Length: 387
Image (cartoon, rainbow, N blue to C red):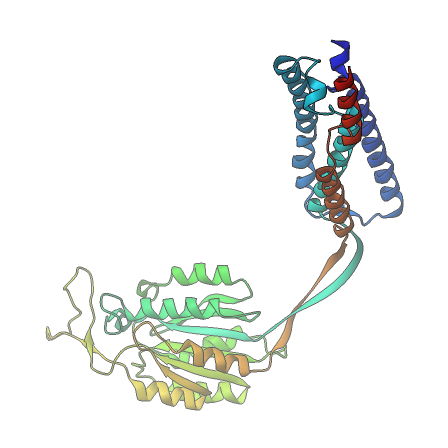
């Protein structure tokens, strides 16, 4: 039996390798951490959770190595006698096995550290958000309930969907919302928060305004009062309406807005063919005092005139399409102003050296075998034959 031991693993010697490796690793980690805390106060791990998860597997690695050693020793005893072993192979080298463990142990540790991405070298940088101030004027009169753009969907629904898509395509611009019918109301002051803007947009309905009609001039005036003219930012008003405006102030207020440097764009919601206004249950439509069904149609001339007076462009909605490409193109052509300056810290990544060392050590582990030298096996086998 003693003769067969030289072909198997020396578990006691292997345990010394494991203990020595763990002692060196944790002592080195402690000394490195002490040095870093004293000399690199900006040091951090970008993904520190990788360390906690990664080092949980180290005890598992140790257990797997011991299990494999015991299993191989047991297999040698079970399937071959020590007289037969010299004819099969040269035996296992406990020293080589220990070296392989050290290589794999430190290699995996380096990869874990690389995965956590050690960083140091703190640098302060500034990022500027540039944009313009945009006020959306959204018609919520009952005529916006007409379903002539998309079957089964109101003009207001299509307009809200268009505003939502417009918000998705903005970058850095501030946005506010005014709703109007016979009067105008500021639904949302100018904000850089697009999520808040969408939340307010979703809550808009024709029930918000008790005063019916379509007063575009009042809506433009309310939008103008929302701007801060002390800020040297370029400003835009976008009016979503069917243009059924019977007031006289729309062109005057649009022209005054242009004189103050504010561009007024208009989006025509509806068709020129005319459509009934559904109210209440399905199939029930608004009627006049004589019992005749009220028909509403897009007043395209009014919307064009307002856009021209405001120095902007007119776009007619076609189904769900409200000409976003053209509208966004016009907005992007306007000179952007710095609306916000944020400061943030950046760190230099230093995972590369750990990644290189880790891959190198694991490559050496894969190249090294646990078996004893072939020359030793040949000499031992020759002696056995002569005996």
